[in-house]
Image (cartoon, rainbow, N blue to C red; front, side, top):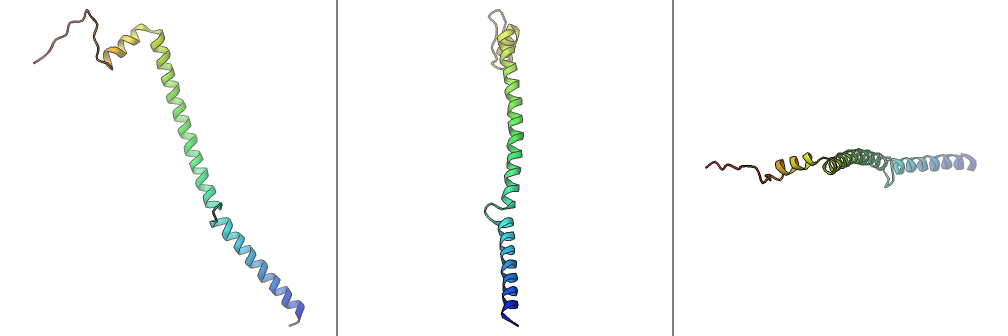
Length: 95
C-alpha cells in the first residue's frame, strides 16, 4: 500500500467514526431526540390541561354571572350548599 491509499482509508475510518459519534449524540445525548419526544409529550399534556382549566374557568364565570343576576340562584346556593334557611321556614328536628 502506498501513502495515498493509507490516507484514503484513514480518512474514511475517521469519517465513519465521526458519523457514529454524531448519531449517538443525536439519539442519546442531553438534547437528543428522546428528550425532544418527552418534551413534546409534556407540551401536549400541558395544552390539554390548559384546555380543561379554561373550561372550568368558563363554568365558574357562568356561575358568578348567574349568582349576580338571579336572586333565586342565590337562595338555592344558600339552601343546598350552605344549609341555611329562611326566617319564615319551620325547622323540625327528628330525635
